Amino acid sequence: MATFKKVKLSNEKELHSIIEKELDALEEGLELLQYEFATSKGIPDFLCVDSGGRLVIIEVKVGEDENILFQALRYYSEISKIKYVVANMFPDKKIKPELEPRIILISERFSDDLRRLATLVTPEVELYEYAVLQDKDGKMGTYFHQVTIPKIEELPPSPPSFEELENYITDEKLREAYKKAVSSIEDIAKDIEEYPTRSYVGFRFKGRLIGYVYPYRKAYGVGAPVLDESGKAIEEDAFIRVEEPETDISDILEKIRRNYEILNKKRQ
Image (cartoon, rainbow, N blue to C red; front, side, top):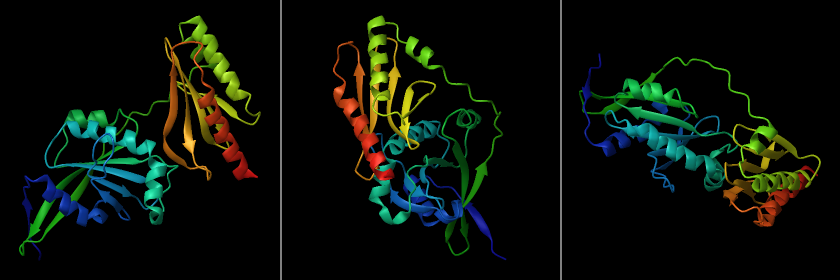
């Protein structure tokens, strides 16, 4: 009968090496894209893709560390913005960039505070506690245990109305400029769908976001994904923040028009 003893690690790199060799023990079908994938927000320990094509950000700590959650959320923010770029970097991995990335945190233990915080953020965060085991021949392996915490299911709040979003802007002249920007996007084509979210008005065509307008208290912003000719997002969104009513926003409106034309061409 095989016997194992628990090994206490003090070196995070050693733990990384063990986990990298045993990703399948964490989740069947999990495949490494790159160890320590550099982003503008830092370097996540592992960037992977799961068996369903979703990107997976994995952050690891040897021992209890409250900062692990906030690190992972920063990495998620960046990876989510460049997921189409990442898919192009690994064309043979069958990545589905239309799906939002997952976050997996691995630590020897998680505090009660962190467990609670992990249930309060979006996206969903998966917690795994690990133990490194060694057999009599000195071979080491990792055992993973998923930490499950029941969530209180709440109905998501309804988004504000178009009028409520518009009236969030306190300056009357800026509010009129915001309305003009919204109308300019509406006028691009009749089959563009306009919809309110909790913080902005979005515009989509064929289910794809082509532009959006953000109301702020003393400003508004207009943004657009940057699409290549095949309709894939290729870089960070183009965005302009407007604090003066007479500001020229024609360039960003032209990018939104171009997004519509690219997606409309694909349909034909």
